[in-house]
Amino acid sequence: MDIDDSTTSSVVSTGSLPQLGMVQALLEAARRRYADIDEGALADYIPALAHTPRRLFGLCIVGVNGDTSCVGDARCEFSIQSVSKPFVFALACEALGADAVRGKIGVNNSGLPFDSIMAVELNPERTMNAMVNAGAIATTSLAPGEDAPAKWRFVREGLSRFAGRKLELDEDVFESEVAVNQRNRGLAYLLESYGRLFCDAEMALEVYTRQCALKVSAVDLATMGATLADGGVNPVSGEPVVSGLVCKRVLAVLAAAGMYERSGEWLYDVGLPGKSGVSGGIVTIAPGKGRLATFSPLVDASGASVRGQLATRFLSERLGLNLFASTQATRGASA
Image (cartoon, rainbow, N blue to C red; front, side, top):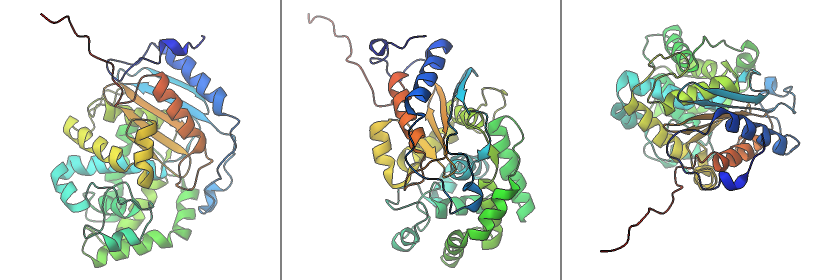
């Protein structure tokens, strides 16, 4: 199917996604356009990620009606990493109340890298938001349960409901991260010293590290995101996961901080809440329409997939997803 830019340039983020044929054609066009980009690097500071094939590139869109379109390596599994953060935040908000979690974690952008210790020291709130590592570890520490197995069960089962299938742990990635997570361990103990962690530091760190090592595909991420886009109901399984109010709060934090210190640039270019992970996944949510997920393991200095960012910007424009796009209202003749 040929793509005519003149038929898509005026589309704005209202209504529904285009027909499946157009969505599929645009996904294929995006993959062709960016598949040969070889910029960025593997996140080899996690040793298990150093051997990921560089050429992998998959894209998937799931609409709020459950319609799914995907191309390339969209069903290839990888560790979810930081893309887990908004979904665990949603689960915590559902369990404890969005306002309660906001008071404990915060919702403002730190303006600093995702693993910054300086951000904890400079800001009285310490955690700042659930998308940076300090805030995400604190959010995981809020998971109901008296011990690590109970908290892990809550997190894993909740993320599996978002995906619509049971998610499995990548043991190699988990063990690899445990061996090199000294910075996250430092963040956890620093938060504990400030009274901003809500269980034992080692317990929080273990569950958080497991959370990041869950295996997903771009199809899974698109389904998880479409659940947030559809008021908390998984559009594939039909299962309610979180409330519509929680979705609204989570998407607001994603827009403000999902892409870390570059969230402003992301909104300027893409116009949608999004979240990246160092394994190469990016999820982008169009409320009321659906979810776009990309996977490509070459990441930039901020830990976001290079091909994924380019493809997401292309598709946001062509599919009319940008939340800030509008057309002039039709005005009648004056009386």
